[in-house]
View 1 (cartoon, helix red, strand yellow):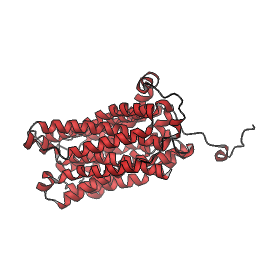
View 2 (cartoon, one colour; view 1 turned 45 degrees about the vertical axis):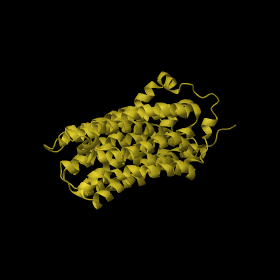
View 3 (cartoon, one colour; view 1 turned 90 degrees about the vertical axis):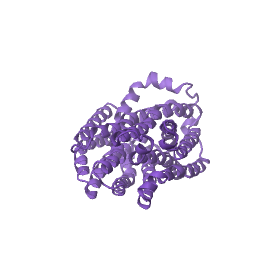
View 4 (cartoon, helix red, strand yellow; view 1 turned 180 degrees about the vertical axis):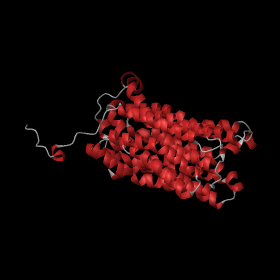
Length: 425
């Protein structure tokens, strides 16, 4: 299980490294480089719009790779999705700016971001099912939390490199070529991830399926459409909080508050590092007390914390900003630590790869794609962005209502765990 969990973590870390490198670049440099005819605010909005295209592609990627995973096995998904994301991320680092090739520059950026989103949309389902379908039933949340740590690791890798480049290069050097280095590094990371996954076996639960679904998406749409919509709405707060902290606040702090890139990145990275470390602990609570209770607690905490987070951000004081980000990330991971076990348990094995991935990535569209754009539009620099806090609180309440309508899936405790006498044979 350690080897399998390590392989699933490595893959999601590489995939989300690619995804987050783009998000950080969108917040810092892509606007003036690829949309120079726009005002600074409009350029940032346009850069975040290309960021959002990746989220719009993720549900399509979950359909394509979910079909492969449910029809032919989880193992092929792990290779194809990682290769696609790695190759397109390297290509993003090679796109010339608007000043060199004109309108073709943002068009190429959009296309590559779309392909990147396709790969990430398939990666999560394959990596999570690798862990879930090998894990003991009573420890599914714990073992499936390893791929859930992948986004945190990927974020720290991408932004750690961005931080080092930002601190070591002049603004002109960073804008000219420095921002491209994290994208080129994706090729090396993807090659390592593919090598690590080369010896993985197919999951036992897929091998036990006697008749794989011929058209998994059709079965999910016909029999589980309500479940897909509920899970998409439920997960939207996690995406909204994460990208409000890691992407929107980075742009807002540097542009509107005048905080240096280095200070903002350090505050955000410190909060994400703590969140990543807490992930397995929250997952253990999910194995002990259930998936649904932790999700409800996380949504409630998010709803209560959004206004304090914005107030702390507005101070522009590093320690206070870190405290605001940390509270938000802890609320986020209270829910998302158990999601990798919760979503697959909601679906039967023959359509699990499609159903779980589609619901997960539709939540990304609702929470991740919209949040940086909406938040940037609401925060125009004419006062504290309370509209952003209200928006995030509304998303949290939506997710809370959706989780309230979902069932619990934690396996029933054994007689030894409950202290009850075993039933007679």
